[in-house]
Image 1 (cartoon, rainbow, N blue to C red):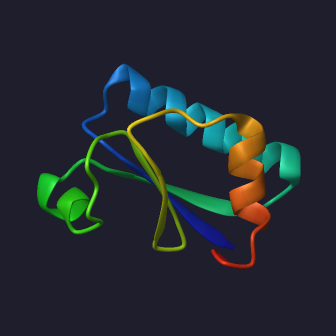
Image 2: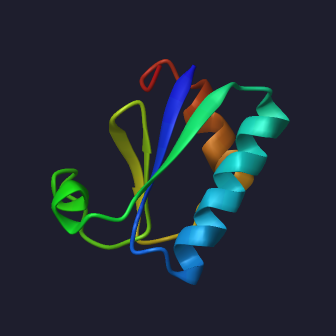
Image 3: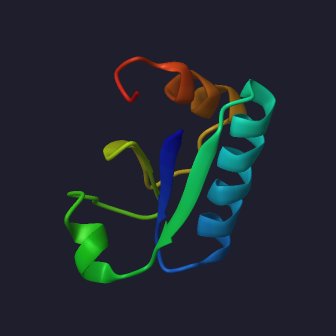
Length: 82
């Protein structure tokens, strides 16, 4: 099972990123645990320049934007994050 973390304050973009990530995991039939990270110290630990951020299995794959469902599906299937 993959661990998918949404990094951000809980703003509208963070919620949209979570929705896109959940849709991608569902469409790809990937089992994933979703974790919201709102603590600034924990977010900074990922060397994130701007939110929202997406982390898959402790690898930062996106920051400062909302990727497409297809992009997230590619990251979920990538051996680099699994």
